[in-house]
Length: 114
Image (tube, rainbow, N blue to C red):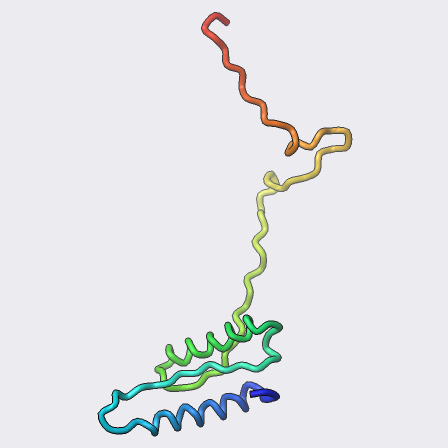
């Protein structure tokens, strides 16, 4: 639904959901329909938009099914930072070889004669 905001899309999807609910007849099993909607201003990529609409659908199902809900972007957690200063990799002082390029030294094995 091009050029609609989330609330306009929700209104249309809610009408579709209501029509589906009214279409139940006879011996056919009753069903519910849950929808999640969003608009193109909520994210930058199609994958992100689909994820946001999915969050709306999941919430619609959690709230009792047979409804339409506007999906909300999930907040991204801040990047994890290593708080241990000893683990911070710093460049070697000038004139020193880079330890990552130096082969690891193996401990000397001493014989029983030493």
